[in-house]
Length: 199
DNA sequence: CGCTCGATATTCT
DNA sequence: GAATATCGAGCGA
Image (cartoon, rainbow, N blue to C red):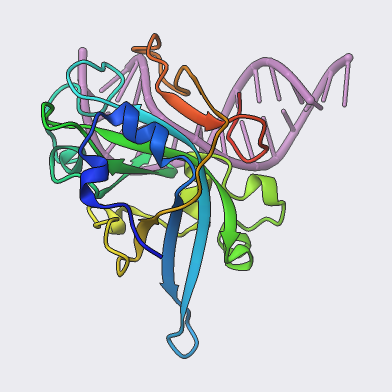
């Protein structure tokens, strides 16, 4: 399967956020036995765009720091950050050439491959709570800050994005879990599906 | 079901 | 000190 090219991420973050819906987030891990590789994957069903100085809710809004440096680097890289003292969130760096920083948060995926392994990482069986939230999907795919900065346009990367299906029913809304810049409707999700985080 | 609230580390004021 | 791109246990209906 092919990966969206780097140029895919070289557009406005809101456009990238919308078009990432329907693509596949893939995590490859080596199992403890016989160093065999396994694929964990899911269809991206919910995203949020985060901008630069124009977006007070973005980690990049106050300039470059050690935490958000991936948002300022090449597009198509994973920006993994730790939040609320417990959880990791997975983003992909993206922006048009006119901006200096930006990223798209992946908020939810629909599990496709490796559900048994996801259940082990999540320590629960219910399929709808496996990956229906940014912290949940990071845990289900065993994603931590060790993967920060990885190139998601490379199919050999342990975390990458593969081209998927075209989704017709994409809706947008305010972003979730933020208090600033709530006027921007930069959350995109597949309407009428049970795998998104919430409405 | 739905709501409230504590956990818990990093960043910002 | 306060806030945070979250989650799930515990409660009441």
